[in-house]
Image 1 (spheres, rainbow, N blue to C red):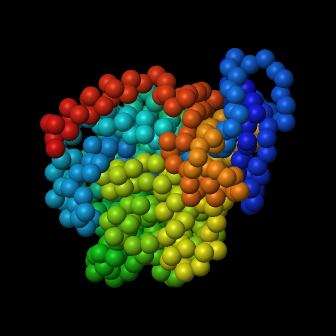
Image 2: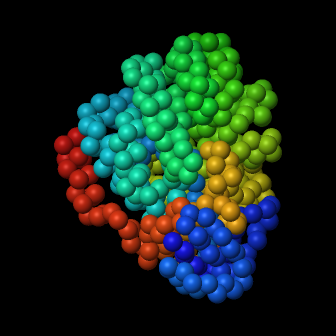
Length: 423
């Protein structure tokens, strides 16, 4: 299957400064084969990208896909109050089929707002994977482990790692330890040993709130980062979600980690958790990607909204408008997010030889005129509804804003029934 994208305004995300040019792109099966000013070659499908910005698909580095039913549910609470008194009691009643339909609803929202790859932590990895395969997305998926819910999760993680650990698989399996406060040293060591055995990474929440840091300090007389370091968690690749309360001494520990930090600006604001010092992390050579968190705490999976908030927070936090620019934010949402997930050799830029994860953004919109700076327009003016076409692994999964292969009305109907039963 060959797909030819003609007349593109290409933002390839290669290099430290924007490289924008008009060009054609030839995709052969799953791979980008040619990027040339004019390609005259027979193709199975030709996409006219006139007045379209073509760029890599966005990478969402921290999600809980099956939490889609919690959009707007008992909002405006502090994190632990919200979790313990609103979310956990309902999650205990979720059925396996609920996980599938809730996850599929999130996949639709991700695709329609330009995300092609995500990193998910939740329960029933098997049902989330079913939804992901139905949607055609690329995902890093892990089965959440806590002290109270270990049971067969290590074995299930091993089972699904072995099932999806093959060349060209769009599913990558990580080990998930929920958080320092919900995992004692024995649980964390079990997760580290499992990740080492499978040669994979660990997805964990870290330093999301001041209360978390206080709890760990009281239990172990050290910071959460120091606690994770003591159990050798940083010996394997990691995705550290949030990373708000990281001290200078903590920075020294995580400077050389494999993986990186997922910055979740809207969730952090909505829950009043704090502001991650992304500028400082990046200055210290730490990979920082952008994530949405679950819909319950962020209310949207639109990475364009996250990019805006990420930029604004750094400028306010540092009181310096030059602390981060639009292109750097776009890099966080693409190639740097790919680095956090260990996928930078496959996705994150549009280059010959890389996987064809590509989005086309309709540039013929009033709110994107005039075109003084395409990167600034994408970060500060665009939104997910501007995404017209999405290609994942060389396959068109959305065309003219129509999701292919999924009945959206059926998904909404199924989720409505779940909401009525549980909420």
